[in-house]
Length: 265
Image (tube, rainbow, N blue to C red; front, side, top):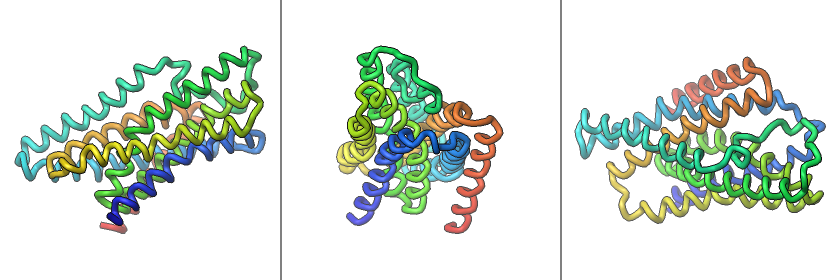
């Protein structure tokens, strides 16, 4: 039970980072986009490295018990690409102008579009981010349930990536309503989907927890995290800063993750 509470706490922390993004958007004059670019690259490096080096391997080990070495490897690979397919389908179902990836640069002046359209954009961004946060919450939760150290790494990486998503919600709503409070609370609420995803996933899967279930879910989670890194984090990092800053952050994230895994091996 303690493990479940710890895993849920990490998921809640990661989800509520959208509120941090909202606050940073209001302080945009003092905000350094290059720092965010490096942080997003760092987050991508952590998630890509841990997905391939730790999560995929753990999933394969779990699936090798019921299926054997070769068949277990096949099931792991299929589940990995299944996770990518799931998050890609969710991505495709959301129109690009309402997609949390298309957040633009917060330092650019907003044109005088109608307040109604801006409000709609903000609300749909919140809904889109909530949908995205469901599988991310499950990824953080399952990671923490398996290995607390691994869970902390995933939670920090996803929290960093949730910051610009908070900006995506708060900026259009603030310009539409002129209310910082409304913009903050809607952004904050979109992050609640993360722990909600963890709870729903846990209660659905808890009666079916076995080596095969754990392995399939974990492999799918690895696929989701790789997709998020390549489709969300790196493009957004390059949009906010320079290419080399994003790549430098990526390599730094991989290095830090590698060292942390070695220290706790």
